Image 1 (cartoon, rainbow, N blue to C red):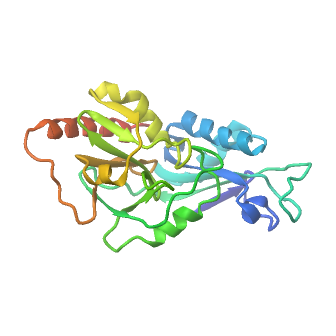
Image 2: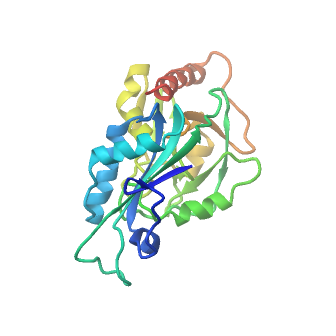
Image 3: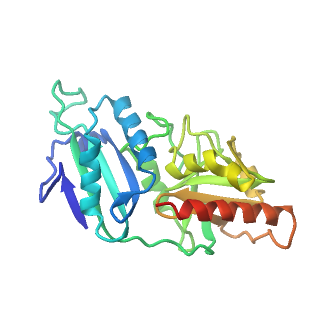
Length: 273
């Protein structure tokens, strides 16, 4: 893995960095194609929203792009971009002079699940916490860490519920369910992350004859869904089945036709460069 700190290799992280002390920062996980971040405008916009919410100065966009290109490592790779408030004294008070820390890391080739693979989705007991930066990827991810520890040996992902018992997200991806010709996904104004793939799907679903919209998803509705899908930067859009459930979509019925539309949309999303 290649790591750059403020654009330099070999730089260490100051132990007083507020990202380490308090999770005072944001991050983006990006798919790189020949060193170019896929859906960069969406990633950059979300990073900037998070930084604005925290009152952290934005880095230069070109510096971030240069860092990501330098850590790509292979033609198709996954990278992480982190921006913290930088070093500070003890205590929660924000220092008068802020010197943000910019970290980029990446490396080996990206392993993408086979397009036909149905992911196995378990249900986590850890609840998703209400986000202090709605929709953004802040550095406080303890709920996700605890939920990831719950994964069974036969899980590929874990469904997380919010404080009201509704489906919020998966451990590291957004959740959709198929209802007729509509893909429903939980809102992200309190819980979860506004994924870049999720945003793309909300805007482009009509192209495949589908409607994608936000909706509250009680667990019972997820359990009864015609189909479940997950999306993130690494895997794009993939179908999932709850652990212990059988695939009920078969034949040439309406559900099967709608499923084909989702696969068409997913293929377009997964092929983005």
